[in-house]
Image (cartoon, rainbow, N blue to C red; front, side):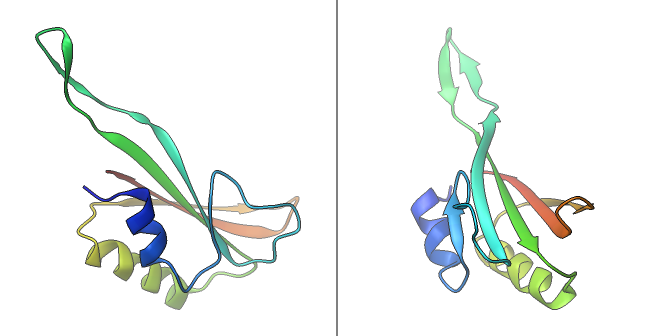
Length: 102
């Protein structure tokens, strides 16, 4: 299981924020945030905790090279991840969201 500090350290070469980026932050950057839990119960108690993380990559243009670099870091951490991509027409940026459990 990876900690949020370890995740931040793994992406030390990127602008990285937890929760949200300050207004006016220049693209590209990463934002990590919690996406809820999926705990396992036994004897009416939490037996095993599972906490979801979403890692958003905001960029002005699509870059398979940058996305591959991010994915390689996630793979090197031993994380099983999924990705969703979108484009925001109003603010003209690309968003790649990586989801995984820690």
